[in-house]
Each structure stands twice: as structure tokens, then as C-alpha cells.
Length: 512
Image (cartoon, rainbow, N blue to C red; front, side, top):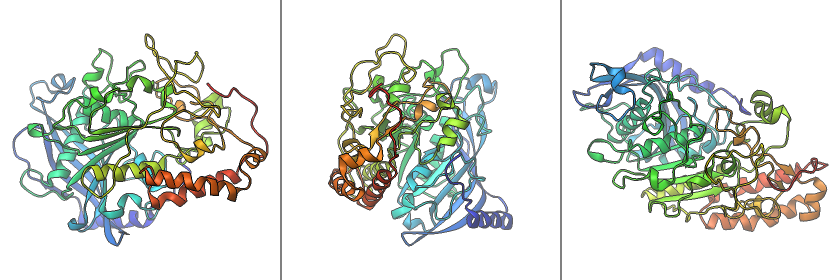
């Protein structure tokens, strides 16, 4: 699926040894009351090495809990009958510093189809859709370890019906309660009175991409970031490729059709001002929209002229689905995109920008000295004519970004390879682009310039790298990139220059 699938062999052996030697450790102490996590079953624990000199460990297991009938969960009353609670058991993993004093920010990923895609994106490794916490095979060192620098921790918990056995198909909002109460557990460090084996964390950031981002939109819009007394659960949210869309697992999708952990085909995206309506409990929210979402997910309909104060919105020229995780074999052979006709895929890489945004968000939350740039959006034009690259919405005008003479979107965050392009991003979204579970429209096509063309424009690869450097340095100064990732971006661009094809692909229109 992904480009790499190296097993995390040493950690897997240690995890198996710990689980077999110690057995299953259960902590329980919650008393009577409303919805809550009532116990944590630790199935395995492994030391996994050090990051920034601090020893880390990985814990896998299951949270056990209950959902009270008072929760605003569509279908719950019918599910419960005369009972007061729905019980659940859901798998989790936590990766953290061993010493509590070394723990700073906990990043909680909302799984994507049961898999940890954000962990891969942040840490520069690829295992694709990898499976449950107990079966995921991670590479040694967890990629380059970025996410664990400076005492960050990472966690995920199952929320989706068909993935978590505790989430019924007829009351899928139970998954929202699980994610909320998992966050409450991590914040308090307690299960009722006894301490939780998962520990306590001063700052919580929830993140997710695509389906996971839609879940976060839903979670916030339906008020689940409020714990008892309306208190905030997650301090910050980094939403990647949500574009205001929501999943039909609860009241937003309570339209008479069956619930599903996906968007409604003609569901209208929500602007942030309609998602963040509870100032007391809403997190500081970073909303990232990628270029193909304007063509597949109608992102322009979520454009907010007056977004909430504690939020930022950024439009990126990169594709939603990163070619760092999914190669051409996956896209064209397995998914059948573009009628299985192989075309070059848009290679723009947003991973280093996500790192800088996480650091900036932490700074806004009082953890570190980072800060976020002001909101930066594409300039929008008219709805395009019908095509296989565009998914309209009946009864609405769905704008897309204006294009410059290089077919690059106007405005937004200006990657170096937008101002000094090595090709044209066409088609903007790979067909089919419908809002179904087919994800081809998350990828973008690309018309790379030939080797002769890039040499005519820029000279040698060394010349191109030299021209790119001041653009990269400006992005660092403005907070779009970390200084530590500067060389990564320059080296990647130089590699792409050197990989330019001998011939250009067949001529196509310059724009959609």
C-alpha cells in the first residue's frame, strides 16, 4: 500500500514479551455517574528508545467505558431500550516519554479507517493503511522522530463502527463520546479516583486528515469538545483536508438515511463559524485545505468571511493525498483511478508545512515559542464548466481557485515549486471525483516540464537550488517552515529537478 512497510521488529518483540510476562493489566475505579472511561486494559508495553535524550515507551491496550443515555447520540435511545448505559471496549495506543516530567504536549490522532496516517505524515515514514494499534508495523526509530521531539506524546483510539467493536452501526455518535472521554482521561490522568496507567498531559491537540478531519469537524460542531460543566477537552485542533465537511454519524446526518462514517454525497460543507460555536470549549483550530478539495469536496462553500478569532485557515497548493504515502501502483492499479490510465501525480509535499503548523499551534497554546502565520487563502474565481475533474453541488455555485499563467492556484501558501514551478498541476483532481468512498479525487495530476525545459528556465540543478533557497528562507521567517526542515525542502526540489523527464507528457489544456 505505502512505499515502505518495514516492521518495527524490536519493539514488536519487546511488546510481546511485556504482554506475555506481565499479563493484561487493568485499572478501574470509576464510580456511578454519566458517560466515562471506567477502565484501561494494558495489553503490552515496550521501551522503544530515546528521542532528544528522553527514553520513550509504547503502550497498547483497550479502554473500557460506558455511554449514558443522556448523550446527544442519534439512535442511542433505541439501542438502549430500558438500559441506562451502552458499554464499549476500544483499542488504543500511546507513545510517550517514560518520565512524567518529560511529557509536554499530547497529540491525539483521530484514526483514518483504523490507521495512523498523521503519525506517518509527521514522522516521514510510510506504511499506508496499517491496521490496529496492536498490529501496526512501524519502522525502527519511527521515521525521523519529529513528533516526539521536546517531549511530545502521541495517542489514538478507535472510534469507527466496523473498527471499534464498541461503536454500533445504528448509533455511531458513540465514537464521538469515546474520543471525548479518551481525551478527558489523558487530561485528568485518572479513572475516577485511581490514577490511569496512561498518565496525565497538560496540553492536548487533536488532529486528523481527510475522513478523520471530517470527524473532527463533526465532533466540534456537535459540541463534543465539552466535558462536564462545559469544560474544554482538547486545547487545539489541527484539521488537515477537512474543508468544512462532516461525517453522517450523528445529528448532522440525521436525515432518515442510514448512518455512515463518511460524508453524504451532497452534504454541504460548514464554515468554521458554524463549527466553532462554543467559545468556552472550542479549541484553537488550524484548518488546512489542499488544492484538489476545491474540485472534489466543494471547499469554497466552507469559505468563511469572518472566521472565529482563535482559528487560522490555510490553503495549500499540494494534493490532499500525499505521494509520500501512496504510489502509482496503489492509485491506478488498486484504486483504478483515471480508468487505470497512469499519469504523473502532483508531487508537491505538504509534510514539512504540517510540522511548522503544529509547532505554531503549540506556541499559541503556551507550549513553546512558535506562532502561527495569519490566515492565507486562495483567490477564488467562478465555478468551472462540467468536467470529469470537478464535483459540483446541485443548487450551489462552487467556486475554484483562480489560476496563473503556469496553471498554479493564485494566492494561498506559496511553496517554492509554485513560484519556481517544475510542472503544471493538471488535472487538479484525478477522476473520478465524486464524494463517494472512491478517493481518487484526493490525488492531483501533474504535467512535469522536460529536462530541456527546466534547464532553459533555470540552468543547472545547482542553479535551481540556489534560486529556491531565498524562497525557502522567507517561508522559515514567516513561520511556514521550521529551520530544521529547510534542507529537506531544498534537497527534495533539487531531486525533482534532476528527475525531470526527457520528454514532456502529451499536451493538455493549461487549466481545468
